Length: 363
Image 1 (cartoon, rainbow, N blue to C red):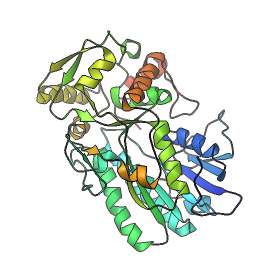
Image 2: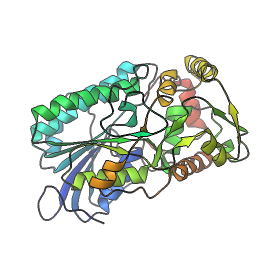
Image 3: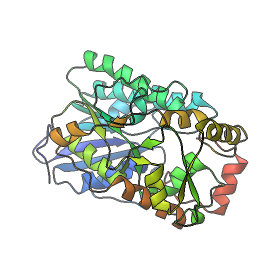
C-alpha cells in the first residue's frame, strides 16, 4: 500500500539513496521502484552496477569521503536522501572505517542541508544503543551511547550525537533515524560471510544436521530482520511526514535454543569468556574479520520494541526472524550474491584474495 508523500511535486518524488548497492540499498531501490509515489531514484555508490537496471533509477559513482565530490550538487532537487553507506571492515584499522562512516556521513548530512533537501533518512542500528535488557524490549528513548569496545558501535553512537546537534541547527530538515536489528537476506550471504566469518567458513556445510552444537552463553539473545522488511520501513519513512528514531525487528528473538532448532543441533552451555578468547585469538591471527569487541557488543545489546514503527509507519514485517536467518544460511550454502560489486558472490579465487590481503585488514 502506498502512503501519501510528505513532500514533492504531484508527478512523484525524487529519492537519492547513498550506498545503494549493498544489503539494504538493493532492497530499498527495488521497493522504491515499485512505488508509484516515487518518480525518480538516484543510486549513489563507489562502484555502480554494470548490468543491473532497476526501474526509474539513475546510477552515479561517488565517494562520500572524497572532498572533490560535490555531494550537494548530486542532491539538488531531491525530496529525500537515504544514507546507507557504511564500512564494517577493516576491523584491524578503525581509522579507515571512521573516515567513511563518521566523516563521510557528516559530509552527506551537511550536503543535504546545503542542497535544501527536506528529508534525511539515516541508517542507524541497534548497535547505537547502550547495553540493555535481554528479557524485555526497550523503546527509542533508551540511551544511544553504544558499546565502547567495538568500532561499529562507537561510530553509530557518534553519528547519533552529531544528528542531535544537526537537527537543532537545521530544523527544516526532517531527520529520521532507523535502528534495525541484524539484517539478513539470501542475496547478501556472500557479503556477510566476507564481513563477519571470513574465507575459512565452509558455507556448503552450514546446514541442518551438519552443525552439531550451538553454544549457549549469557547474553546470547538478539533480534533479526529480513532486509526486504527493513527496506519497506525505509520506504515508508521517505513517504510519510515522520521524524525521529524507529526501532525495527521481527519476532522471535533469537537465542541458542532457536538457533539450535534451525540447525537441528544440540545446545551446549559454554562460558562466554572461553568463546571470546577463541575469537580474539582467531582475529589477532587474521583468521576471522570480526573483532572480539563486536562479539562483546552483541551479548549486551538490548531487545527492541518496534511499537512506534508499527503505529506511525504502518509497518509490519512480512518475514519472521527465523525465516530471515534461514534464507541467509541458504545463501551461504549456495554461494548466493547479487549483481553489484558489494554483494557479488566470491568463489575460491575471491577467498584466496581475502587471505592474501589480510583478513580484516581491508575495506
